[in-house]
Length: 405
Image (cartoon, rainbow, N blue to C red; front, side, top):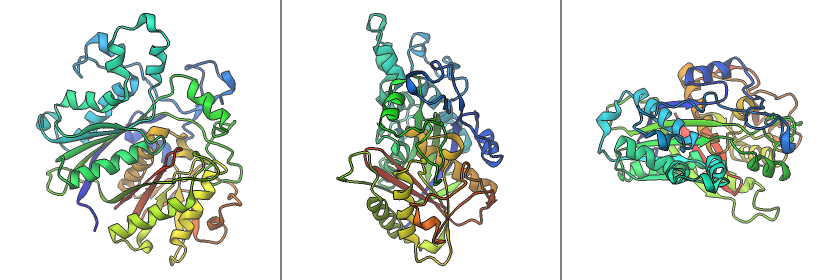
């Protein structure tokens, strides 16, 4: 049966977008949010693509507002600073005041896969003050929020790589339904502050030379890395708050063993996840209007994902529309699912599906794009109010899916 959980508020920081409003404007006006960068390290150093998506103003933070001592603020991961900001805004967006929730059973569930700040500080052990430990460990991305707001529900940071934020949402929804918390704050975070991870992904042939996510396109050769911070505030149907979308169901599974290796996606596992999640929610596949795909633009990932979607929906009476926010802003990894979900919330609010960028010629290995079962949203089109699903897959094999109406 569909759940009784709602998304009541949200907020975000994405490349070229310091608010949900500016994010929507970028999406609907086809702004390429990835750009050439030289402020983190010299452009093109270490063989890293020159283009990736970065946030603005990551060094700006109102420490006194969030009751953070200056000594701690200077040693605090910017991911955590921005999570404090967007979480506060998400609560307000839900029509609530943070003070109303003090000492309440509010759970905090944050998806993140790394802290480049921790890596940077640990490379200078002689300069350590101790505040690095409480400012940059992944656990603090959730625990600092619970501390600041005086939330007493479960508090955890979840790392499943690129599916972290939607996996965190799955855990949050389960906690709400089991009444282990009465409200839930869900976040996703990814900042690129050290070249090491980029170098590793380049050598694994995951990152494309162009710095472009050509999702579902024949020329897709790898993804562009990107930053992102986002937060949702979740309530049950008994809460007196704004209700922006209903979470009909969430699901998580694993690829298991694949002969090609741990990073190779498993389309069969993707298909099983879809079948189990929609069956649990009791949703007929003809009601699905759109799927926000993982869609990284990699030669292995896109065919596995979209062919699984095609097998799942192949006997529908009409094509399934798909797109990927990564084509607009790059791949935000630990916050990637959050970016896709916030795109969907804005799409529902404005009644329009933004175009998927950089799509010119359908990937020959994606059968659904050639047999009429799947169609990429290549230009803005009306959203008619149907069911929407969001995919998010981790490079270690953890797959997540969320269904909204």
